[in-house]
Image (cartoon, rainbow, N blue to C red; front, top):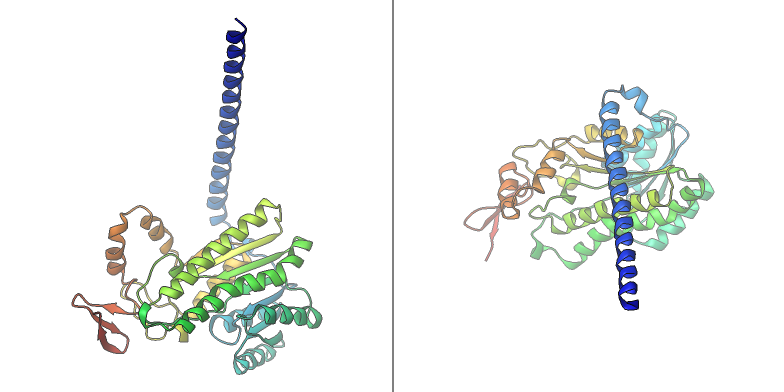
Length: 335
């Protein structure tokens, strides 16, 4: 009888544990679904709010932009300076830095330039110290610098692959480690990662670049999750993923369906996303439903879908007979 009674108690205890766990899971599911519905409604409502009410004032921000000597970095630096920001630009191109500063100083904008090789974490940290001494605390960090080597995988040399990963990925870690602690201390700041739609799609001729941008997407989301979990609600994290731009990096790229984006247009979209504290922005927006579709269709069909859209072979086109084409015409064949 004692054994039976103990067994009954054990069974009852197991039942109560099961019921408790089930109720807890049910409550968590209901709570999560409620939040999803709330944020969905919020996003729909915000869509109809005039832009002037959605954008924050950044006139008192200190903005640091990597790769500020050319392209997107230069355009963003000018746009932030026109809004009254203190602008700090980093680059290894000293001539480019000088040009950007000159353009900003022409309209009495505030700009400081620092030569910095962001591949070298020690140089990043020491330059960050100089920034704090000469300018002040960085409140808005834009990780923009990037490189691309447009070659087939086996044609890429090892040094080029390492360089791509160091600039496109590792530098995000070093700059964030340099400036995030102060943002966390004040619970105020904004980190922006210029990723790419190549961080969601494999493109022929850009194996290392795609890998680096996939990494940036993952890094940015993971960092955002950490900050949310630790209740740093005053620090925003934004990922920007544009299509190919008409910059030096993608000179010669041909797109069959989607137009090559103009740098100034993309910079306007980036600025808008930052001012509205957007979490993720795809440029153009049409890629958002297309990326959702990618997760639904069979994996074996993705290559053909990319081919149809002219995405996979925008950089290097491979014909059915193995002939490889790029913007300069026939090159060689795959053996």
